[in-house]
Length: 215
Picture 1 (cartoon, rainbow, N blue to C red):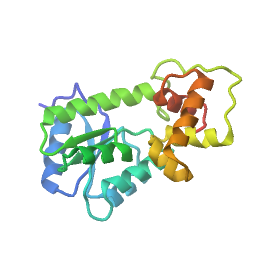
Picture 2 (spheres, rainbow, N blue to C red):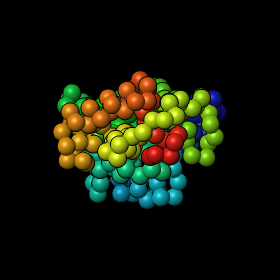
Picture 3 (cartoon, rainbow, N blue to C red):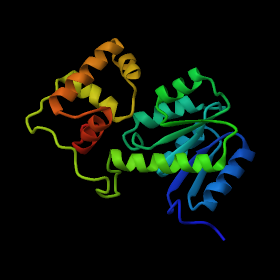
Picture 4 (cartoon, rainbow, N blue to C red):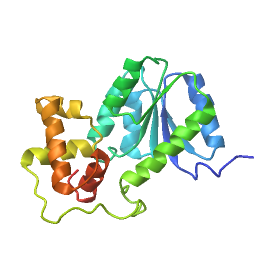
């Protein structure tokens, strides 16, 4: 009998070029109540994302056609998918590999081989966090009260661009590269916006931007 109490019919996009891993992980997640759509590489995953938006993406890092890093960049730059939590699966477990994965835009970095129970726990945690950060399109307001900031807050054009990138889940270093400025400059802009709005962190700043259609 299938165990359906955990997933509650949440849809996951699983991307890996190893058919054996796809089969094992898909079976396990479906047993736990999740709906699982699969793709063999990043390019195929983008085709899936054109048709439907999953609740979460679980993605291998090293793949042919398009690797996980390139895929996450596309996901974070598209307003339709920028909020979707991403979990990286990788055989590379060095500290610099983890840092690169998280800086690229992944929310979780897990090293292969992994325990299936740990994967489920990370999926559940990421889905709960995503629901807290922002309202998802078409899902209604189920993430608590809206972020409150002073009504007369005015952002400079540069600050507006920066907060749009923050709302896409981009790290300060990525935003700095995009705007061709130093990371310290981006940190200063983020700090200024936190001071203007009275918000406490980048997560609240991102949610405020999304709720007010800035992103």
